[in-house]
Length: 101
Image 1 (tube, rainbow, N blue to C red):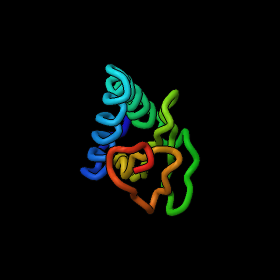
Image 2 (image 1 turned 120 degrees about the horizontal axis):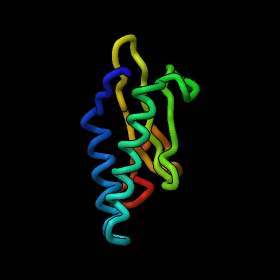
Image 3 (image 1 turned 90 degrees about the vertical axis):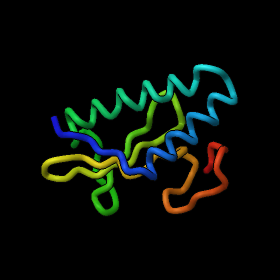
Image 4 (image 1 turned 45 degrees about the vertical axis):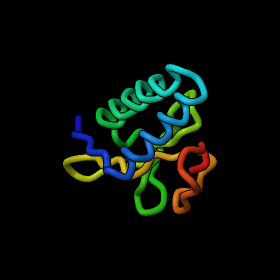
């Protein structure tokens, strides 16, 4: 198992997604957080389970939600660098509060 660190910007993305989902329906944001925790445990245990992409960044879709966790594996730890809606481009952010940014 490798320790996982979540960048502040990724935490902000997760908080925004949580708040957005809670506004839509109570407890859905909580379910998202629970699923994210489960996926962080998976990548901590088996960091290479998902294929690396550009610049060795890997991503996993947090099912059943449309959110992605993007992370990078280093020798002794893992960093979650971003969380975003699957329809959101990783380099472009839109206004906060919507699933697209």
